[in-house]
Image (cartoon, rainbow, N blue to C red; front, side, top):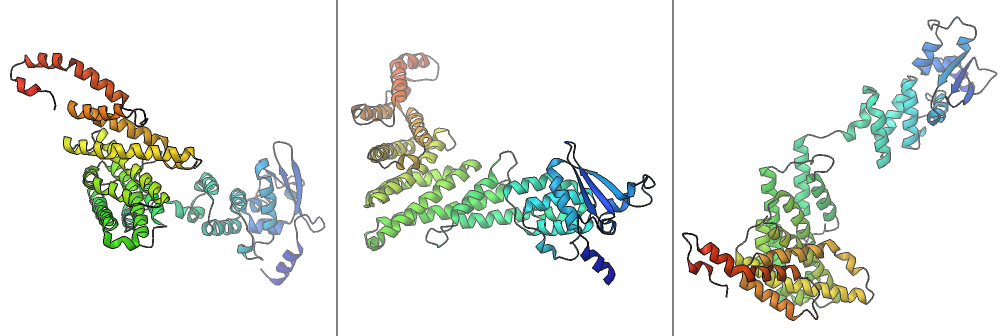
Length: 445
């Protein structure tokens, strides 16, 4: 464009009736009707739609005044965007595009109008802006409604939303996994929760399929990381219980609590993959030491935080045993009950006591569903023990009912009574079958 054209452009403005040679009439179905006095040389240069409408080839071009007035019908919701676009046509070549925009929603609205009116330069400026700036979640949803129908010109906007290939997903999953299961002695504990949360999300099937399917290779890597985490946990236990490390007791207890948080998350991952067995076995083997660690805690906050962390893991372990996800021999199941039933009972009593004294946030640290799960798991596991072991546990519970309100073993007591009452009759009937012997049905000690 020569200097005279540039000068003519700079003198033109939307609404200047003295120099205007065309009217753009914006109209809505609700009756809104606004006349905008414009200049044909700017409209035709910046918009193919207006170039076609104002050309001699347009079917109505010979009708009187048809070339001096262009009707544009729009929705009420896009009316202001049409006005803004017409103003932009006058400055798009004179002002850096970076200075034209200030928010995503406005640019998206203008882009829709520019697409309808075939304004190539405006479209390009909108695309460059939307491709470069961050979006809020609601803006992203709006973009997904609008952009996919506009063709290849706007494809760069959607680049950040395109699915990536599976190898990249695996790379980021494995990197995040190593971060999520890294040593609690490291200085990245502040970002581990985010990595753990996203790993769990990647494996979750909700409205969408999981981002990653855990094949044999992924499961192997997860199990190796869990082994390393469990080894670290066992080492921390030994350090806490070692009198030679008493000088760093407070820090060691904090690391122990960090480990418990990692283990609670690990349980959720392993539950999804149905690979809890090794974790459960390790927890059972370490149970006595874990309880001793709690006894080492001296500061009240340490005691509470440690017990709460342990409760969250115990709930996951007992749930796996209850549902048969992990099959254990009777002595190990009995050991779990004998170690963790008193611990859970004492912890519930302690938290309730502190809450009654006004420490209101404590009850919220352990969800009520966890207490219900623990109670249900204990009942199920107890009822799967030999009747003699059941009797010992229920007797201890009955003898302390004046002080023990949790867990409620009433269901276990009722089932034990019914089974015990009919046991001789039931087993005598079974004993009439060939291949059975009286020795097979001796009462439990």
